[in-house]
Image (cartoon, rainbow, N blue to C red; front, side):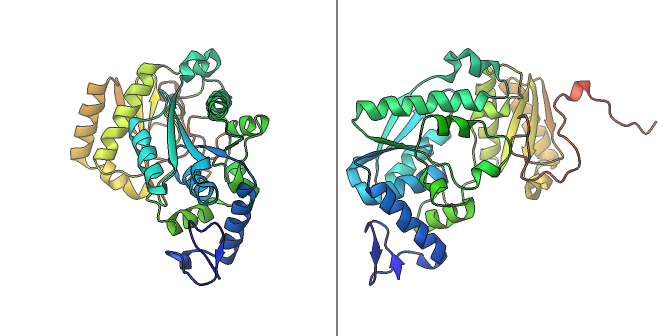
Length: 315
């Protein structure tokens, strides 16, 4: 038995593209998600264009067609490259796509950048989704929260999802991240292997105000690293000091002398006073409170202020 994308159910005779990538549990979860979404009159998917929201959008479009809409919130914290990805992925799926504008920087609680920044951001972003759903006479708002998310360290944004009663079909039906990627691959989505990409404000250490200038220079710095061929990275902005994190398998490229010279020059032009490379490598949420990094080996906390830290000396 195979499930056919776009058929809205089990198809006994027609094989699905790349159906071998799905496990029996994947197939059962897809059917359960489809059945659940089919009970809704209409759906608006909070759509970043990442793999999680893309899978929700694909399933919703399967069962509801034009009654499903993907909605992307454009703001200062969304890199322009991510917005273009969202447009492209929506086209791949075939779902209606609406882009709405809002600004987190209008909220002083967000700008303050305390430990609940993601809560304030998610509350505003999802609030904008509900406003848009109301304008379009859509009854249900969904997001891409998956079953792995609650266990991944400090995630105050999930509180906003629960408080606003957003429907999270991936979480509800037990889709962990690996399963989400298999389903995305089965649908033929180009983002199946796309690395996670948090909003730009996550690059600014807790307690340092989120400003348009800081967001802009982080976006430009990360665009440069992307152009140079790095795939998993972050540029953290420590009030003018750029701390570059790259995946461990790309660290040797980051230590190349030519790259060191080029990145120092480019990031200085962008507006950073100092440019550094973090030898811990890439770590999710490394400037957030309560962080439990995916790559943390337990060697100690990430340094948050290199100028106020005492280092051992060989003298």
